[in-house]
Image (tube, rainbow, N blue to C red; front, side, top):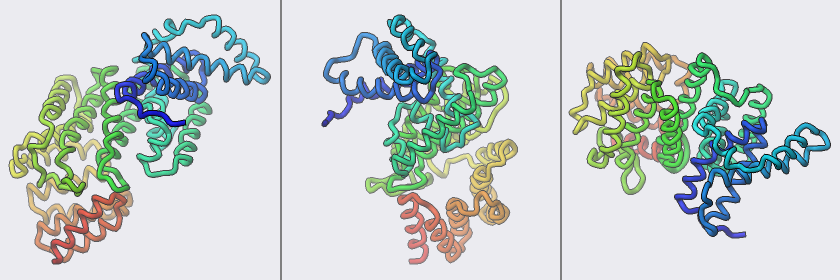
Length: 414
């Protein structure tokens, strides 16, 4: 059977409604895996019918009704073993009108789903996959393609994540205030990882995966709407906006990487930069500053410089000093070394990298070699720079990054 490509407005609507309907179904049936399957089937039915029949008057109610029917079928098929579920299914048929069911608090349900999918009981890889599937509305095939793994592998990962949730007994309800504060950090971390993978893909022929970075931004906007007073949620959204604003200038027509210092800043999205600065500025009177706010502030300093040489590197270094006190992340120390080089010279920064080379977390990461190569070049050691550019190229799985690093080595050795 051949299907026509889905209209973008319908596709966007389905992605928006998926977590809302899934929340309604899970709340009613208390079965994450079966509910997720039922909602996916309902979304598929909508994708096939709506382009031809037109949108129903209440799309969410339509999806909820179809998903309820799928769950009723599922429960009936289990009736021999599960008498209680069979009785619940018959009761559901009598309750029928899903318009009332669709009035469930979709915003709370979306947040609950995020908490479930990003629960600390799950590995980051599983949390990312489950978030994109259940909350983002991406298909298993789309997620597998984004992370360059076979669809069957991704399906197993998602299945294991759902089983972990089932085994852990995580209830479908908002966590307590204390639990929410703890688990919200996991939600933000997963969204941060999704955005980073989309903005700078770790492997493959493309520098970025716009679908992932845009999906991360969409989900972060949802969390910001639901948690408007949380300064770190706002900080993460601002960071994404300010970073993504440079996307058009990061590559040339051939898809080759262009470093920040050489980008055509007229291509930066000034409207998005203004939004990011506004979101960040609104957080300042609200209390303590966190890591995402500091990273957003660093991005804002870069974005507000008209030319690369106008960048306020002393301010960036001061922000990294604050960030380093809050975080043991070696990437923070690595980025701080670049700021040190711009303020105090490459020799001082190279001394910092000598210390970082003993950190096992960076042992096989290409960025350590890439930054060291750049600093050696600034210090005039072209032989050492060529060596480290080539070492970095051998460690990255991103083809555009590899090509860029090899080009730098060739430029210095030629």
